[in-house]
Image 1 (cartoon, helix red, strand yellow):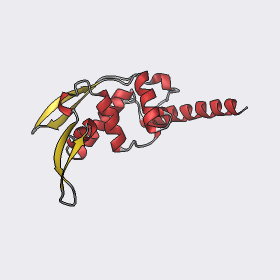
Image 2: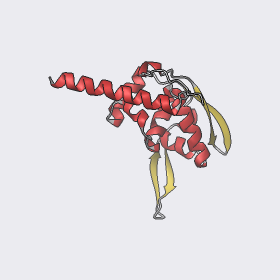
Image 3: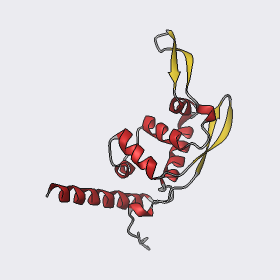
Image 4: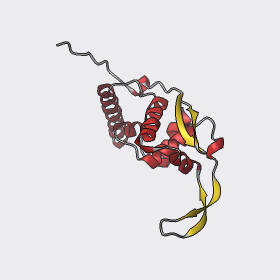
Length: 156
């Protein structure tokens, strides 16, 4: 049996790309585009989620966080603008509250198929959509080694 040779992978191998996703908005399915992640997005993710963004590649990102990031990457946000709306709480109370863009985006994801579509689009925007699981593992390990080396140098 032939073994596949896996090339060394680094953070430089990420190739962020535009992605399309179909969301259920206002009673109908509609296609939306998301842009590839840029440096400003990496900084924003680090500030908002409190960690080196490359480390988040090694584990599942909470859906709320992914929705916020994907909302940021949406090219056309017109259908997802925040607004004050009347809602009925889980306790049956009618209240007025602000519904944010990321919340509206989550409501446009129907079932696990929607979550999977968002996750796939997100990984494409990050630039890891084409990587095999083995390549992803190498990327994460290399990134963690570099982070540890930098921390050791700073401590000295």
